[in-house]
Length: 113
Length: 113
Image (tube, rainbow over all chains, first blue to last red; front, side, top):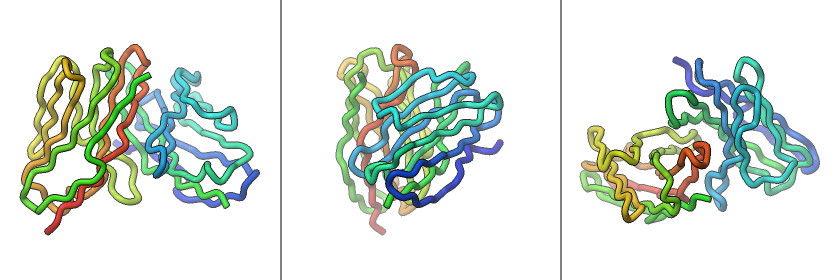
């Protein structure tokens, strides 16, 4: 069974631009969550989607948004990028009906210059 | 919300020795405690997890113990090998928090050959 797939793996953006990251969960998993990982703040929860609806949200500004499609694939968007948004963005999926074990993808490395 | 503290932040051990990482959590309703290993340039990989109805779980050289009364849990790696070198994260979540994972700050483990 294929794991969580994230694209793109690496990208560089300029301050003020916006970025969209994509995530395909493990087949059969309908819950997708997003985390930001930085050296200073560690792993921080952004949001979780299930059945195309946001179910939980972390403490991030409104510039961070996401959505989920009917095939469970998810995208997250960051608008008006700031230097501090440089981070590894991790997507994770779980089978919401069989427990709370989550599986991470390899992440998308975002550098804002 | 849940607050997870992890110690030590760095750990250097001789190959063949044991490594122990400890975490404490604040939310007494937390009932699921996974451990992730993250190698350079990769996403976190689940290595073992434990639920609140179990006190100890073992998988080959890796074991996790949970003390619900004291609200702490530990990862034990025996007979360490160079490939055990990585960053290890503990996490906790609860049904009350809709399975949102709260992570410790991570422990960088270096196994000296």
